[in-house]
Amino acid sequence: MAVTGDETESAATGDIPAYQLRSPNSGLSQSIVMAASPGTMQNPSSQHAEEITRKREVRLMKNREAARECRRKKKEYVKCLENRVAVLENQNKTLIEELKALKDIYCHKAE
DNA sequence: AGTAATGGACGTCAATTGGA
DNA sequence: TCCAATTGACGTCCATTACT
Image (cartoon, rainbow, N blue to C red):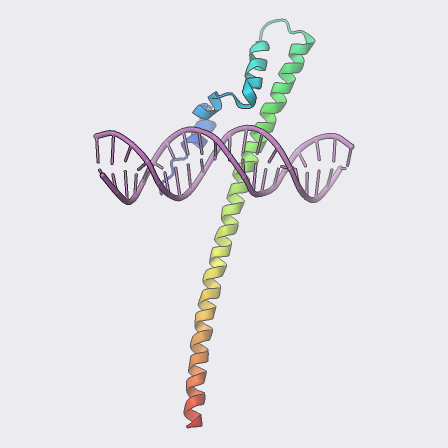
């Protein structure tokens, strides 16, 4: 299946994926952003709110990347397991053939 | 052509874990 | 004990495929 990776692309280019426009956590961060408009005098509480928003954005960004890495590692792990299965299946096949050949030899000797 | 089903990738949240 | 990293679960989007 072809995957476009358009969301990754949009993240890289700074576009906002549609689902991020929805308000997570019942729109908490949105209201905070509204309250902390730049260029105006900020009272301590709005500064605090801005700090909270910034920390949240940093956390989300880190987690986003961590999730990507986690999935990458998981896929790699699964691929390793699949390779191992293939190797073991081949070994098994070879051993079965070998056993069969030995049995043949043994049977003919017995006759 | 339109549509439902399916699968892969993603972002987010929440729980867990390991190190300082 | 706190904090950052990790990861499972969930909901969403998008592309492809199968069916009508």
